[in-house]
Image 1 (cartoon, helix red, strand yellow):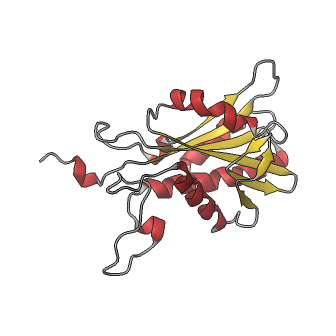
Image 2 (tube, rainbow, N blue to C red):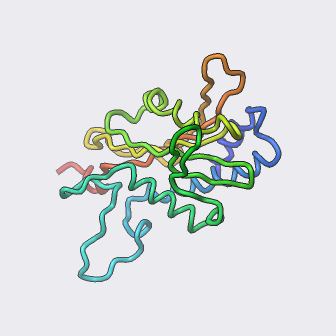
Length: 208
């Protein structure tokens, strides 16, 4: 997976990305990329499986709402948590552990004494990486203050898609970044990913 190779190369620049940390965090990042790839496909079957004939389609948090039900970050949290539970990390994933960095983190994967937190957010204002990092990176990085300096941030992108002329490719919705608090000597590396919401079907972009 070229994108995974790119992220691993970028993470390798961090002095703590060695040994057991490299082995374990790499597994989480790979599963996260596979999740992002799967959720970039707008078909409902990859999210819910086949629907029985005559049954209404289930609520898909990635699609533009058609009724009163609006997507929220809890939808992404639940989906990501269930994805990890169905994969090779099923025995080491927890949802909403408390008392982590004096707060509550959304999804935690633990490998013995090593643990990695994934913070889940939603944003309907802007999906520009710099904007998202300015709003959410500090919180996501804060959870790694008492363990390995690596974590993740997943954002449900609820910006309107009617003027974007399409959605980002899967290799454009994930990147690495670093946060270093003032006076700190160690940077906290964070893998960021976005899941597009408010989506329409590809045919909706055809001009009538």
